[in-house]
Length: 72
Image 1 (spheres, rainbow, N blue to C red):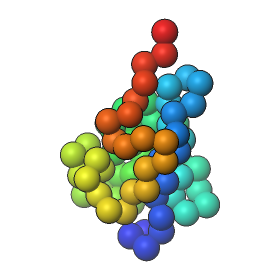
Image 2: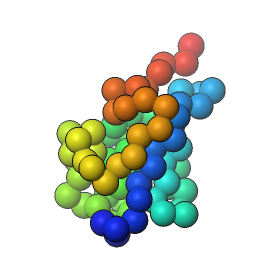
Image 3: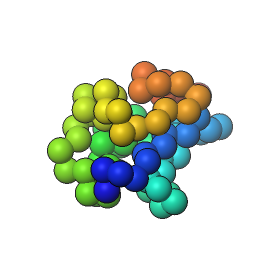
Image 4: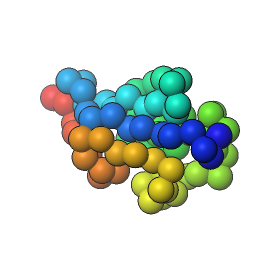
């Protein structure tokens, strides 16, 4: 799992960001908490929210880990 690239896509119209590991779509995250849950379910049990924000395994597109726009 560690060799597969984790991509967090740019925020969409709903404010969520698609999360992808390798070719597998894990879902749409709306926060770092959501992202860490997806990654834990995918086998990265050791990654909490802070780890997810700082991990070199994660490739952030369209903004970094602080970019979770609220949609009104």
